[in-house]
Amino acid sequence: MYVVTVVFSVYRESMEEFSTLVNKQAVDSLTKESECHTFDVAIGEGDTITVPFFLYEIYTTKASFDTHLATEHFSDFSDKTASMVAKKEVQAWNKLN
Image 1 (spheres, one colour):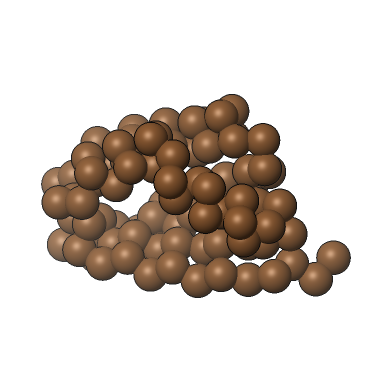
Image 2 (tube, one colour):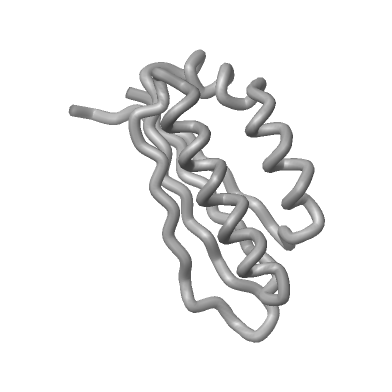
C-alpha cells in the first residue's frame, strides 16, 4: 500500500471554507476512486494566522495516487483552495504491513 500524508497550513479566515472543500475531496476520493482506501482529515489548533490540516491517504500503489492527482475532483479542489493555503507539505510512504 502507498501512503501519502499532507499538511496544509490554511489561513485562519479560510478555515471553514477549506474544511468543507477538503471533506468533499475526501468523500469524492473514496467514492470515485476504487484504489483509494483511506482518506482521513484532521485539524490542529494552529496559531493566530494559520490552522494546520493533516491528511492521511492510502492508495493501492503509487500509480493509484498518480491517477488521483489527474482526477477532475482533485484539480477542482486544488484550484479552489490555492489562495487559502500558506504552505503545503507532502510526504509519501510505503506501508510495511
